[in-house]
Image (cartoon, rainbow, N blue to C red; front, side, top):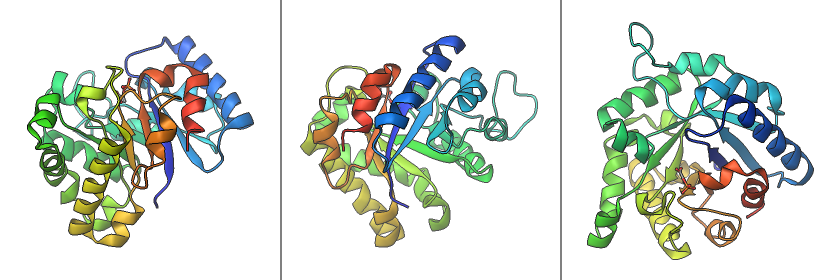
Length: 252
Ligand code: PEP
């Protein structure tokens, strides 16, 4: 079902103790002042998930892992499986983030395995897509992002596709302080929704939450979220400050 969602991506930040404090601060602010119709998700490091789950009202706040293994189990030293993630109490997993694609060689083939395992274990993938600056400048960003989806999540059945959340994150806007303009965000989100309509039909497309990510903050969230095809945000830097994150949650 199409929902308004604001998900934080803490990346490789915070010690366990700092993360628990941050989660508690978000929990308290959301309980007091958070827009009730917005789904709030905290994407924490693996090491923090169980403690964060225990520290927040999980009826109100969901917890996400930032990755999961491409294999179900076995001799894969250092990997954390989707089943393990699920067993912590997390409900979501961020997959296909551009930092994982770029620094850890995550290809469409690997991501297809991760998405399938996440879904098989009852996790909701927050599936990221987005173009680099050269592609934006060449004017081929719409086709590029649709191709990223065609190679991966568009290969799911309609029933499985309905279980995922899409996050459009232009790489040139991630952590740079440069945000996509409201118009750029709406154009791409409409492009993605049109591609979902062509592939799975209008009902599925209208039911899909498409989040924007890239230097979103309390000052620009309102303009971005006012667009009809922008259903919320995936938030990096600004999710590390509880007040800023609340400001984004209340940005609709
Ligand atoms: C992200 O990495 O998902 C992200 C959107 O980061 P930032 O908000 O810091 O640009």
